[in-house]
Structures are given as structure tokens and as C-alpha cells.
Image (tube, rainbow, N blue to C red; front, side, top):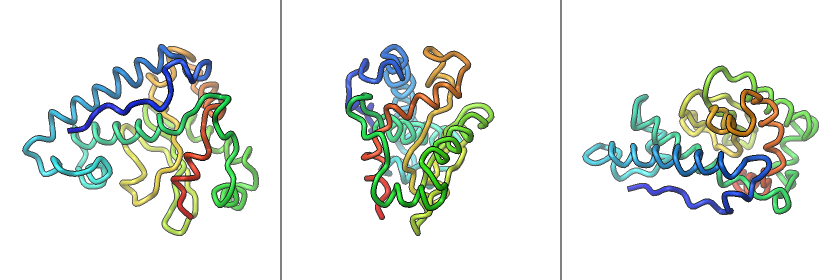
Length: 195
């Protein structure tokens, strides 16, 4: 049985980038529903004893994949944030070096990442992931998809489902995505990039 992720910060901690109201709905309602749904689907299935990652890697398209994918996506998403004052605001080390190698600057990378998030049609996620050799790739994933299903290592994600931003930003997805950099804790992302 899976349980709802405990947030590593208080609900108001990400204000004004993400309001306590949005976080309450997004974490407490949307994510809780995915957890509840998956727990109802697993008993007696071949996925019952698998980890979230293994379910996402192995489940065919459908309810089990969708709910497991959304739980995994949201757990990675919520764990990458810190308060504006506590977040490590710029990447360092091997991750920063790889970003500079591939994009030339952190700002160019951020612009590219945001652009992929803005241009993703419908609901989904934009991801920064690493390949087995450490090369970085930005992908747009529809619905509940996660780059792990493509044998990539997910590092950083922006949720572009409307429930992630609509209470705070209405239809201004681009403004929301640009604001998220203020609360990204790059130390968390660097820890996921194991090179």
C-alpha cells in the first residue's frame, strides 16, 4: 500500500510562487486521489508488490500506469522545492558543468526548459533527465508519463497540468513556470544526477 508523501515544508512555505491554497489542493486532494486509486487497483494484480518506479516501467497504458505515474511524478516534483530563502538557486558541480556544456549558460537552459513547458499541448510534465552517460535531455511527457519509462533518470520537473497553477496564475502558464525557479533546490537535483 502506498501512502501520501509528507511534504518537507509547510503548506505556506512556497508562497508567493505556489500558494498554500494551491498546495493544499494539489498535494492534499489531487495526489491523495492518485494514491487512493492506485491502492484500490493493486490487490491481486501483478504489480501489487512492485515499487512505483517498477510499476511505471512495466505497466501498460491504463489506470495502474496513470495513477502510479502521477504519484511518482508528484513525489519528485514536491521534493525538489524549498522556500525562496532556503533553496540552492543555482546548480553547481557536475550538473552545472553538463548544463554549460550542452546549453552554454544556465539562463539559456532555463529558457529552453520553460519553452518546452509552455509549448506542451494539454496536460503533462516537462522534465530534465540524464542518460546513462550523463548527457542531459529535456522531454515533454503527456499525462502521467515519466522519463523513467524511456530508461532516463528524471532529475527536475515542472507540472503543467492546470491544477498545478490555475488558482494562482489562471491561464498564465509561462509566468508560473518562470516563477518556479525561485523555489527549485538545485542541491536536490544535483543529488539525483549521480555523475
